[in-house]
Image 1 (tube, one colour):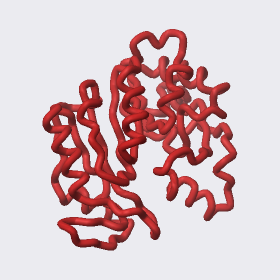
Image 2 (tube, rainbow, N blue to C red; image 1 turned 135 degrees about the horizontal axis):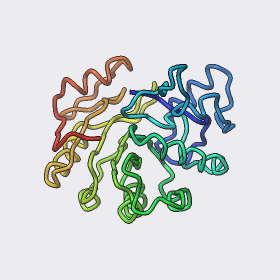
Image 3 (cartoon, rainbow, N blue to C red; image 1 turned 180 degrees about the vertical axis):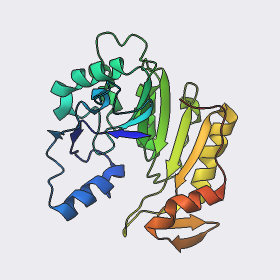
Length: 240
């Protein structure tokens, strides 16, 4: 697994951004998250060792996890990133975006029906957000699509949007003032995925977690491990 952040910085754009971990981390370091700047890792996937091999090994490259690949301020840099992605056909580049409505304006000229080595994850958090974004997402020419409902803020019905989705990831919010995650919402999405034969992953609980009507206050360090212990993931095939 490799991480690639060709730029950093982001701007809050939806309800799910309220307690964003990027903004919280930057605030602790005195960094202005609203400034979007290129990083020293811009060409990281194509940098080579002295023996000529790529420094980044083949496999999944998690892209722009400290920003948004489709953010407006990066428009002038993105074409160079697409060229890097096209060069590294041995890698699968996966990115999340809250700006899926910008996607068609951000693709390279040779995109066609999508790059085989790109996975696009559309993020949602509530029903109105899901209906707006997933209607757009369903019409886009992308080879590999997933949906990330994290933080999930309410029960959502996404079943009608799952026809060409490979994976749905669900998780709660991590923050002292986190909005609650009800386990029944998670199970409901899982049921939708099973009916559509779409892989499902419960990524993390929420700091404020509700199960069977009882509220729990959980530590951040336990959120992911407790989600794994729930043992409710559903896999249809090997992904990417």
